[in-house]
Length: 151
Image 1 (spheres, rainbow, N blue to C red):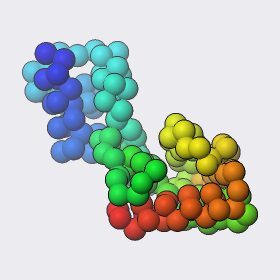
Image 2 (spheres, one colour; image 1 turned 135 degrees about the horizontal axis):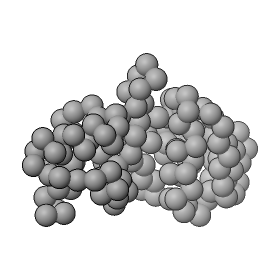
Image 3 (cartoon, rainbow, N blue to C red; image 1 turned 120 degrees about the horizontal axis):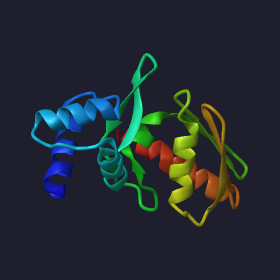
């Protein structure tokens, strides 16, 4: 039952622009799944479903796709879609994101546990990534740029 419910949840998110858990609960119930908010919340967490901007101040749930292609770096599609500009100087990389998304992207970078990254500091739409040296910063910035080109 759980597997079927989670498969339906993923299908609904891929087919509709769902903004809230209430909308998701309603869609699941329309498809024969009686669920509580706690169950949906747990499913979202287990399936690593994220929210991203849908424009005009709205957000929507997105599937946890992975962007592959550059060894050493894997961003979810939601994180990659949030980055709008990359630059580096010395051992620092500056990432500009859509407004309000810098923290989510920084957490994603921190969770990659990359040896060359010492840490991130995020504001509203800017992330400062501190790397071990200038070479690491240049390599990381190049990898992020390559990911952005592959979208």
